[in-house]
Image (tube, rainbow, N blue to C red; front, top):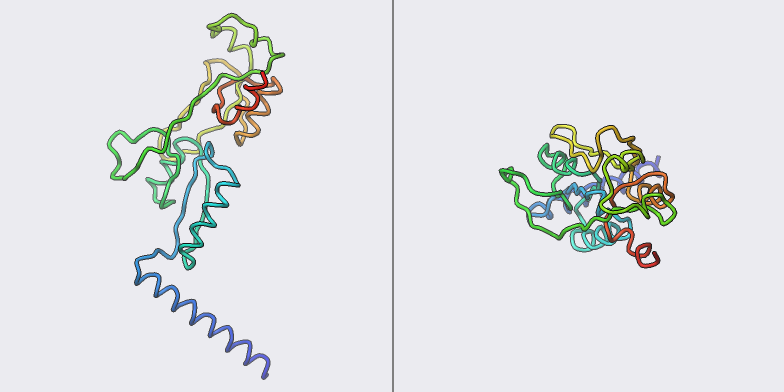
Length: 193
């Protein structure tokens, strides 16, 4: 019974200290929990890890919860109050939605097929009728309550729905699917031909 009493007392002291830290954070205007969504186009584990490290170093009592969404799914999560901060929401809301935002840059897109793909030597501009004969690799928009954004997909073209940019890139480099990729994802491949 002495061991139980000791463990219970330590548990209660830890809980009191946690309450005190939370109270101090609140009184200094620091949120107890912040939910951050990163557009999957920008999400990279290395960068997200460093962002979390920076945030925890500066706000040790705050709980940070990270998630990813695709295209308008970022806006959807923000507008429906599922997140507090969005990184990489595409475009802008027409009326602003009462949301403050800053532009962080642009994505430059490249149509990508491997050198051995028949489209690699097709005369440009490539006719839609020819493009339509090859499956398009794409990542589906995760928006639920607002209109989904449809990436480059031609009417009647087969769609290869994948879950992330690394898979999309590999599918396209293998020649299984075609489509556009952000230039930063294929910089090395473009340099090597």
